[in-house]
Image 1: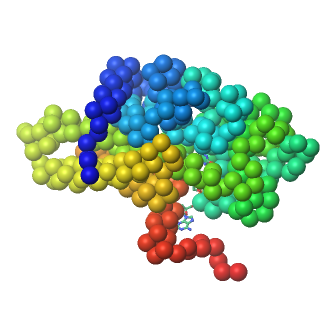
Image 2 (image 1 turned 45 degrees about the horizontal axis):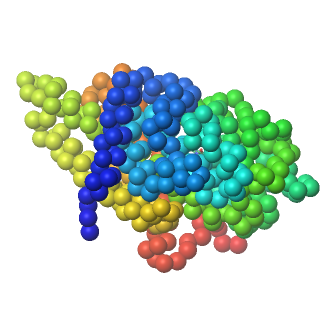
Image 3 (image 1 turned 180 degrees about the vertical axis):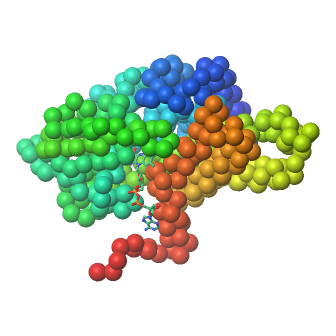
Length: 383
Ligand SMILES: Cc1cc2nc3c(=O)[nH]c(=O)nc-3n(C[C@H](O)[C@H](O)[C@H](O)COP(=O)(O)OP(=O)(O)OC[C@H]3O[C@@H](n4cnc5c(N)ncnc54)[C@H](O)[C@@H]3O)c2cc1C
């Protein structure tokens, strides 16, 4: 077992870090409080080859492994947490599921703009009555000629204010087997994007309304029976969230470490108080343990999609470790940590969101328990 990155991975990691320190570090705090998708960062990242890292070269990507993409998002998040949203959207989010299952025609229509950092894609899964129980979604697709008419509504869709393309989970028929997905373009007739609301992490989302919205045959991504494939693709998104949670927690930890070395109270630097040393030690162990679980999930996936169990274990560990690190960092920085002038309060708000988004920590624990007991625990009441 080798716990070191290869020489090539180390060089890649160093080059992303240098780019992040040169181009992104200076405005990291400002960017954390800015509304809207950071398009300037997206174009810079496209130029740096940081979008489509795991997408095959024939489709315009770099043909790298999932671990390469994890390395990239970590290095960016460590320096500028907000900019890591761009790496997520360009490698781990809806785009990755899309690239996995799209037809050649769909890929040639949409990937060039997405990989150039000129467009962004959202995944619309959650509905007012279908959150953790996502298979209860009601948005339906009814046949109309060669295509379908979509009606229903979605909530909490990340980047909905800016996205050009939406990967929408829909119901073609009853039950889990009736679920698939379609691609809806922003300007489609019968598709409306509601007034933006704000999460406590600063991100905005808008409710999406589909009213008999026509989706032609060219925009069907996964037909009826596609739910399992959809969730396999979504596991990549979950690892992106895990990597960001961990790196953003580490970012807060590093800021707290610097502070503890320089800030003096009672005539000595904070790092000389054992009560604080132990906080650092405990956080460091949690971060390092979660890091190994994240690497395991990514390495086992190689060039493919990650395993569901590996993903659940990694996401749970990273979500918890990242949040704990940011939370302790706020405490260690005192009033400064609680202030918007310092990045750690933003790290706290972001890491908190990932404990809910993309499979809450409770739902991950359910998944892990099923693996432990080698049986399925239906969460629905007995009929
Ligand atoms: C920052 C952020 C970004 C998001 N981005 C997107 C996006 O881009 N696209 C999208 O479609 N959705 C997105 N979501 C929505 C997210 O997927 C849902 O919020 C999540 O699945 C939980 O659903 P819910 O909010 O309806 O909570 P509910 O399902 O109502 O759950 C409420 C609470 O009960 C717990 N719970 C529910 N069922 C069980 C159970 N069986 N066992 C134990 N505990 C349970 C949950 O863990 C949670 O703590 C985002 C959410 C956040 C916070």
